[in-house]
Length: 173
Image (tube, rainbow, N blue to C red):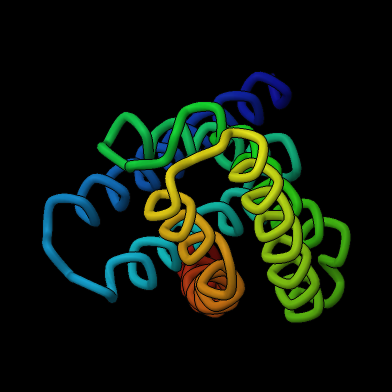
């Protein structure tokens, strides 16, 4: 009975966090926030990835991390579909570092943010050169998947810690 209960909790939490991730992506495209859009939406998405990892473990966090870029494309992101696995890989790195360094969540967030940024920056540069994208599209992708990824992962980490602390209080009450 306990395994079944755990499985239902795992599936429900993972599904809720994936749905919330897609809702944030949808709202981020629906509300014109200009230059701040990536920082608000990206931070909320990264928070969802880390909350999923903290509440469901590596498998739930990985599910949300891998599916999130496809949700972004479904909600109208201008990211080319072949680049989605690269973003999924960057998301996974953030989740993995957070889970591996769970004894020190701040270190996990910092390591995950830096490694996600490095992976995406390298990945976007390789992708752009292999795909021969027009200069304007290539420049926009490089700008999107460079230093802002470091910032949004860090902000998302802070948000996740605040939410997890609040959830801890709710669960104990």
